[in-house]
Image (cartoon, rainbow, N blue to C red):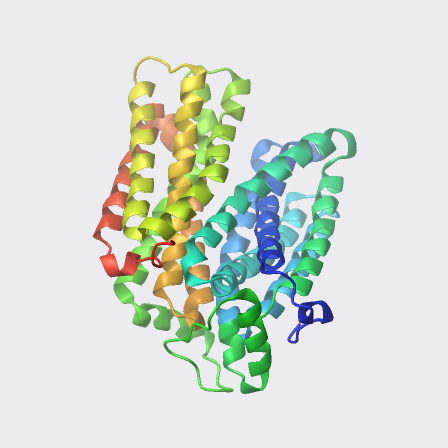
Length: 438
């Protein structure tokens, strides 16, 4: 994995490189959704109450958060490519091992380890992506990676609908375990090592030159390169992140935390909220499809706008859209019920705004940190965000039950209003995207 393969030397197109990375992000989405869509079948198979699956489902978020932090640090120290390839294979292995579980506790451990593997390759892949595209296309590339996640979520849901009734949950797990193999093969054949990592080793200068020429990029020098042969201890990475840009780092962590609270509260409890408002169960359960579709189509649009107009304009606009959507839902929840087509349209706009925020945040991480800290920055920010996601998944239902649906949406509106203000307050120079594309 440390040297280019034979096919890599034939100079595959940049499209194949980016498409292979996008496949990795799709695979991330399938894993995140795999256990939730399988949970009803597992509960029925084992004859358990619904609450019995809480621990295995929590393992997805816990494992991916741990993996995002550790994977980012390992990738910055020892290179992105080997870590990503090994983690892809580990994900498939642990998904396959999960099919031998017969209790929730037995299911917890392989899911936890699969989550660690997914977190490792997600953070490293996001950092690698930012190095393999030109700066003026970085925001657009990040937007496609963000859009790949809901694509994976949808793929898992569609596969579950077709496979679970006929073949059971074990077959679904084995299918996605096998899917990691072609994704791994494409990655090995088409995706090179990080240019920043190669630049640390003079013996690989020819490989660095081939990669930068093939992809049409220039090497982005690190602001604080480590001395040759001396890798930073893991515990110093967090201090380096704060030292590199303390105000922006704390701000990004807070934005990730708040945004994940918002996103997970919506995805976890909006169906419950709509059911409480009297919408039919079939509509309430499927209404988030509008949100997902809005995210899929809105994310590339957000990436283009980020490259064209900059983070300082697009990011607050995306947050403001979510404020308006949440406020409208809070207001209407307290009064007359919206028609189903109108509600779906509102949710679709919410998905667009949410996609713009997430794309902007990952782009902001890439803009702020030098390449030698970028995977650590992505991984740590993502892990802190997932803590917020866990809180939302646990606490959102209590807010709906105790305070009501209108208060639930009002809380989301206030939260995203604070995010909008924070994005407007971030220093303008930190938001500068690349120069507008001509």
